Each structure stands twice: as structure tokens, then as C-alpha cells.
Amino acid sequence: MLSGPTSSLPFMSLSHRLGAYMKQNKIYIYGKHALMEALANTPQVVSRVFLAKENTDKDIAEAIKRAGIKPAVLGSGDASKTVGDSQVHQGVIGQVSLDKLIRPYKDFVENIKVGPDTALLLLGEVQDPHNVGAIIRSAAAFGISGVLIPEHNQAPVTGTVVKVSAGMAFRVPLVSIGNVNNTIRDLKERGFWIYGLDGEAPQSVSDELFEKPSVFIPGNESKGIRQKTNELCDILLSIPTNSKCESLNVAASTAIALYAWGLQHPDALNK
Image (cartoon, rainbow, N blue to C red; front, side, top):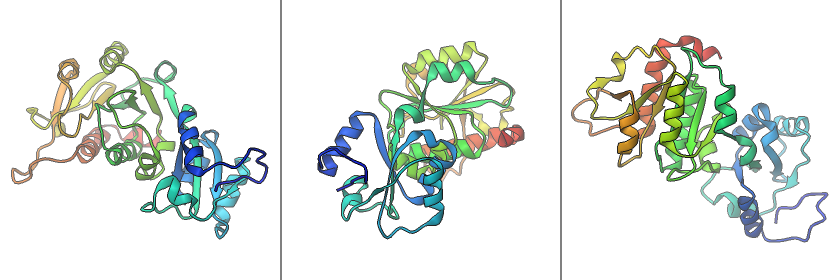
């Protein structure tokens, strides 16, 4: 079982501890890269680190020490119970507090600097955690100022999301929102232009100039953007593709849209 050198609590099974941690709004991340990104960019979100005895990576050891965290031992079999047998954890698992990683919308929006080079992503009921992770990675790559994540009907941030994001979940702000349509209305009042990504839209993403602060909304993998949300968008954008290709998945289409925006806003990459 996972145990810390200074722990005075009775031992309990890892599955019970995992359940308890999830109730406290905590998740596990795994692998050297994800943990190094967390410790380098948002060390305050990492509450514990578990290392296999055979792990002698000096970079990991130094990063943990700088963060003031005393690592616990990752016992034999504990990793498979925590993150599954199929995950490559490299003998490194971190416990992350979602309360510290995901920001409240009100605090975020009242402190963001809004200008022509400001763009946000608002996830529209994206269900696959791999898509969510890939979208977060693209957001970081193209200088997006925040990823807005609904509390309902949306894949939550998990260890898988963080892993697929290649640790970029610790670089781009992740923001919790309540009602999607109310959030859109508020952003419009703050000067944002709302773009819905819709494969059937007549307007091509390559023809848009993106002159105003922008919000991009990728929709659900099978249903797209909800009708009421669709009606609140200022413009619906599509991505021209070969007629032999049925469609792009939501992560790929989002990456292309953000790239198109980035071409018009190269300074966003230097923020």
C-alpha cells in the first residue's frame, strides 16, 4: 500500500484511499513528464508524491525537494490499483488537488487582461477525456488564455486528461463554469466574439480575421454544439476538408481552428 514515512494514520487499502481522495476533489497524475510540469508551473497543486524504490531520477528528486514535498513509497502493485495496468507511470505518481488546479470562473474572468490577442476555449460537452487532454494541449500550444470547463455533461479533468495534455494542464488556466449559456452572455458583455465550431457552417475558419477577443466552442463528439448555445454564437466556423473524409474529430478540428487564430495573433505565443 502507499505509505508515507511520517504517516501516523492506520493503514488502509489503496482503493479506499483513492475513493477518499476523490471525494476530497483530488486526482492522481502519473509519469515523469506530467509531474515535472506540475512541479515547475503549479507546485501548489501537488499535495503528495509517490515514488517506486527503484526510481533514482535526480531531476524528479530535485523538483520534489524544491516543492517542499517529502515523497512516499510506491509499493509493489499500488500503481496498477491507482492508475491501471495499461498506464505508463514510470514509477512516479502525484496527487493533485483539483480545487487548486481548476479556477473559479468569477476569479478568472475578473483578472484576465482582455485584448485582441486574448482567446478562450469553452468546451461544449466534450465527453472523451482523451479529446479534452488533446484540446488542452493545443490551447497551450497556440497561446490560449484559458480553457473553460462546464461542471455538468462534460468529461471532468482526470489523470488521463492531464497525461494526454502532456502536462499542459499545468500551463494553461483551467476554469470551472456553471451554466454554459450564461457564461457566453457574460463573455459577450466583456467584449468577446463567440465562435462555434460546426462542420456544416458556410464560413471557413481560414477566411476569418479574428479581430476581436475570441471564444472558441468545440461541441460534443456526436451531437455538436447544443442548439441554444449555437444560437448565442456570433459566427459558426467550419474547416474545409476533402469530400472523401467524413469529418475530423473534435480535438483535431479544435487544433486547426486555434492554429488559424494563432496565424493572426503571433504575439499570443509569447505571452
